[in-house]
Image (cartoon, rainbow, N blue to C red; front, side, top):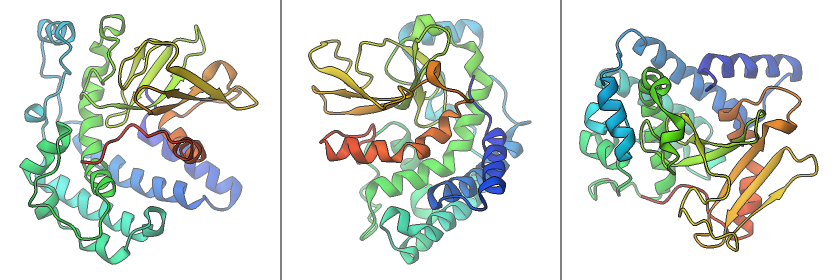
Length: 284
């Protein structure tokens, strides 16, 4: 079951009390979550599951995610206000992204939050050519857009995630929003592999012996590295040269907070990239 945003905040606040301060990446993440959590609270009474059981079953059967962009209930004033706060947080931690505080602070919602730009982002297309931000890394621009729209995606996902028949899905993209996975875990009961959506944090079951990016099942192309404790695994694919970080919950002594693990395992990203493998995202 996905961890709620407030539970992650509580964990980080307790960690800060015990240790006196959070590392900069976790401090950034905590501040980001505080804004996103507030947006989620404002949305909680506004969203309803708008699909019938028959419609849900048909989409799952056809491999169609349960949310399309045109079905997103976007509160534009709320989204714009969240964007302004979020870009400020990115600006305050610009050194984490090898970026300029001034450039980040100058990003405008009127450019990045147009319906056209958001739809292209959602459907994994290149952003409109009219968006040209000199000196700004495209992955970073996409990350800021994602951070602003994420609480809307999560709120929609909460209304639909219990409707997913996991055994009928088993696809390499999210059953809720169609996003790509960026983390995985092996469950404590059977060691089944579950993927975590990079966009809405939905979890879904997937084959152990298959690449979640190019879908190859050729075992000559697939392998993983593990840490000494066996808690973390780095699955790599030689066919598409991508990797996915994984935590084995059978080896975990404490509760695993999956969204937080993205930040706790940043060194695994560094090692994978140094070995020539790519993360889940593509530059758009």
